[in-house]
Image 1 (cartoon, one colour):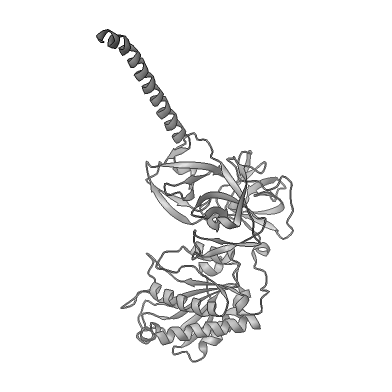
Image 2 (image 1 turned 90 degrees about the horizontal axis):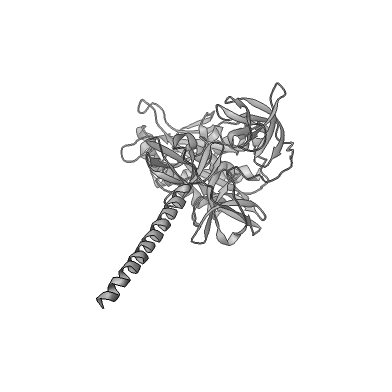
Length: 440
């Protein structure tokens, strides 16, 4: 027996070493594969955005030293997947220059006549816009019968029942929908949105950079190739610029006239001012953010009863950036955008009453219609309509107004604003005004 054991020991040892070597090689291979798509954050804190540019909303942050998975690259921005499976974008100059391989992205096609595109993967989430049958969207992630997609430059969700996976692509450059030049006669000029915008020889981030444009530089539009515009400068030099780093001429951005004749056909975006870490104007027992949310919720209920499609920029005590508020309106092609606020001054009891603000001349009629209704039986003074250079109005391509519904540091206004009767008055006034606006 001892003799047999002695003969078997070398074989057992060889077998054990072989297994150990196999495990080591497998572990090493797994480690290599796991790290091929990872990068290390160099900066102390890095913003993760919803799209490849500084104009996109910040969705979260990661700290220095953390490693994140790379999916693709666009115009010096990396598309990444976070640990919670969210998809975001990070500036390449804020992270380590690690070599990486690009993961597959799938393309899906909307299979129903029209599909709601939402901010989150549930039926209660805000509708960001609608996609018609045949629309192709880049698929980022799928979970619980919801599909995360790229929609109008941001991360969005659509029910998995409404989209079919049709193809896969592997690329570190943006999707090019067409290889031919398509001219859009509605575009007149292209304006660089950022300092140092790259103007390239061809429609790809792999093409040579011909020159860099300054923020605000204007170019003549020539044609469209996928997600790129062919442009010409004042010297006659032509080149290509990515559509996510520029703005179009005003004629292209202007909202088309409303085709609807009743409130029941309208899409109304209600913007409850402030929220989250932004409390707005303070009051003895509450903040502006609480008052605006209560008013927005009551107005939403009234308009929904009338058959309107109502979109809230926020439905809870959460922070929503000004950029996102305007974006929600633009992407939903809102028929009316109403931003609700309550005012304050440096000196208490200095001013009282309501004010209706507009930015674009085309919205004066809407502002006057609403203000006229707010004058009827208003327990507070009415200060009329005024021009207001507010971001949510200035960057809004849809009919938009901003209401200041009273002063929180005025004793009389305070006693009125937070009552159910005043809130009911505001809601009824806006309901009647919108009925008049759409039927006239």
